[in-house]
Length: 271
Length: 260
Image 1: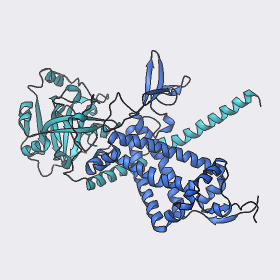
Image 2 (image 1 turned 45 degrees about the vertical axis):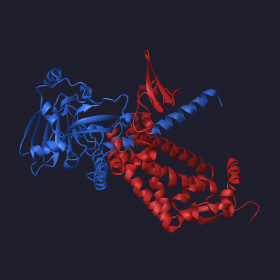
Image 3 (image 1 turned 90 degrees about the horizontal axis):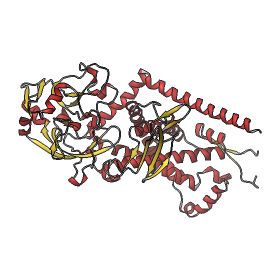
């Protein structure tokens, strides 16, 4: 392999807040699923009309048999073994929304799940604020993340390149490409703040202090549903992110997020 | 590669993954049980309470809804039919001879019948009930203002919390710890929407929802809103009451401040 140029890709602030965020989001996801399991159903509006959820994970008794059923907009999907009913015939079934291995703690403990969730929500807030304030003040947001008009008008080409698993090299690899920029901006400026706001909208205390929280999302139960959807969006982002890290050079990517140093492969046909 | 070997490899991978996730989760489980981890996690509750108290003015009201917003079926959670013999006897007579007692750190302890409570200043409100489990129901409540009761009983200056003792048992340990109780601070006790409700949706409060009296603390979660309230007591500290954390669920690890 041709030797590449070594650049300093990620600043200390980005590296630290990235890893703190990764840990915090994992704990928030798993403790959030513990809380979700206390009532694994979602609704729209202010209240829960129990016979009219937009999504529900139920255990259905079918004579002697138990089945896990997930209902989305009235459409029932059999999910025995995963949602609504965990486990298998061999090791035994367990009535719960999402399986134990996805929740924190692993056994049913709503009180402890809330402890983990709200403590890590504070870390999430402080870490996110530190990142956003630094990104604004240092110019990171404008310089590294905001896509230029030129980039946006050539987004089609970038999508094609990604679809062919061809990734930028040389000078172009020293910056985020336009799809990366948009994905990171969507997470940092839309999904993560949405998690915080919909989370706060579920708090009866915060709703009394800031009733606008309820109006923003169309009621507390809508806010809870949006909280769940946005969390799903973050999980999808992380999966794609990890796949991209793997196929674009896992060691190089990992090193750049740990030490900051990143090797840029030279353009083919150039020296 | 033979099918058998492929299966073996798959089995090995599956076992490996299961072992890895068990180790990771086992670590977190163990952490959850460590006293120092609990203390650190508890500090989040203190931070949340202090922050919300700072953001939440004593006058700020929980949202009130219209009659069209009432839940079709308001879920009754926790106890729904207390079996305490004294309670059952009162329920049979429609609580005609029943009295609420207000005592503790007060100048003038009170004993009030339902008729007397109904004659005191009341408030009617349509509010959202948020359960700690995640669901919400909307109901209409009418009840005596707790502030009015406490003003009549005249709190002593040392009073800091109001404790509510209930007729229902939720636990199964066979001890006093099974009895439901709750407590709130003075800011919530004197809040305009804090009432002891004797009516729900224009009917006499039904037994599943806490007859004869149920507390409404609209800026906190449902488990704070004790049902079957028999006795109200003003105290200076919660430490010496039962588990010492200020409520049935609190003694089992839930937050005392349930504004979130």
